[in-house]
Image (spheres, rainbow, N blue to C red):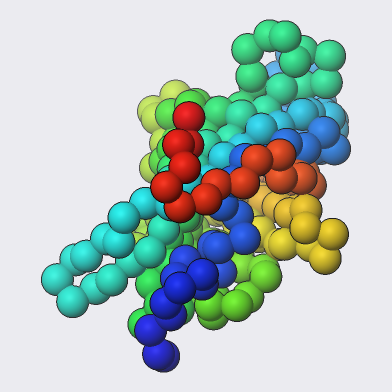
Length: 201
């Protein structure tokens, strides 16, 4: 694949640069307090900022650093119930797109997929034990809500919003070791653009 210069240097990550908000989030998960699986609506803020070119020997990686926080509807003045930080990376020569993320609950994963420079949608997948695209979690969660898989997709829409969907497969001790899908989806609109030479903060 030819090198991509200029405005598409970040390839499929280009359209994410900026700050975003979305109020139509839906989280479907098991709630220990209620002993049931129910949907929860949430409001979310996200930001995506370019990082310098990363070089590992002959490897060249473009990317963004990012953060996402979510508040349950009615709890916007309280602490967020979800907090994540990480990197979105793209290697032009191999078309690999990577989501390298840490969740505040003591979970870390690196999920991967493929994407071309002008794609408006890309997906990631991670599996425990995979030497490249794997999942780690703290001891408490391993014994009570073991992560068995992760899949996610980012899509840039025609109205210039972006939608993400993601699914964590959990083996829940509270349900006798039964596996269930914990799903999240939201559509966010851009509230701030970043331009070269501008201050991000």
